[in-house]
Length: 323
Ligand code: F6P
Image 1: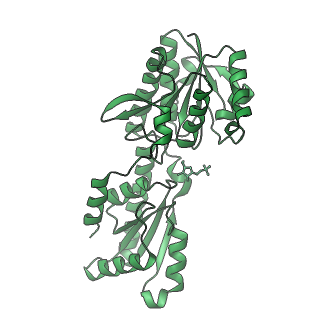
Image 2: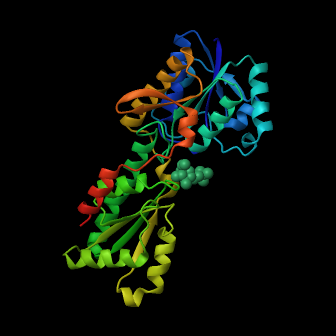
């Protein structure tokens, strides 16, 4: 193998740049030419790539986002889009591609692999909803951003004896919300895996008040049926009966834009370097992630067909500690 490509796809995640840097420098060390594809699968279909050298990936590790750019490509979801990508790569002599991304991106890499093209994925999404890595690239930094916000809100909530909602990202997965609630000492949390009604939230908060708490923080996952918007509306409508108001902060993209912390820089470096070794060993059609402290390659067909579960023990602890 002589020539490979690397791309970042889907929602950007802090640590992607560390992974790109590791792929490029380890690849060069192994005698490979590494091409950086711009804007994910869109760039692959357009043949929009350039050869990267060691210096071009210098000074990027501490930066959030991805120097290659990312995209959510609709065209790549079609067979003809993927055929076009394969054709472009074959014409350019590119023999394998490394895809740094989350669920949607790895569904794309799996489809490419099914069509016979050598692919390796690197587990990267702030949502931590991807099977094949205990923790994916970007999660740790996104959680630290959310945590900082909670700490700030707690200050103002305590000063005014108020109750606050903090909505975090995560799509249909409650991992970010659960961990933020645990580490931020929230009074309650709302996640898609464990839906709770607005009235139940109201009584949990009233209980907290009766137990002597002067303020409250509720962490809400964006993918919950009762997300921050729905809860606010309910509390506003029934304000008189419930007896107190809620204020809300929706964190949104702020969580994705942080500069990667130590954990994500190391994880990106580890996974990027390992991806080259797996590639040289012919472990195509796999996702590179970390499980139980070991860097492993999990077959993409297992990755795309398995749902990652929330850690049960942490769910239990979170409920006890919120009291
Ligand atoms: O998958 C990462 C993520 O940030 C989710 O948490 C969020 O729901 C989604 O991406 C937002 O997607 P987009 O960047 O396409 O608006």
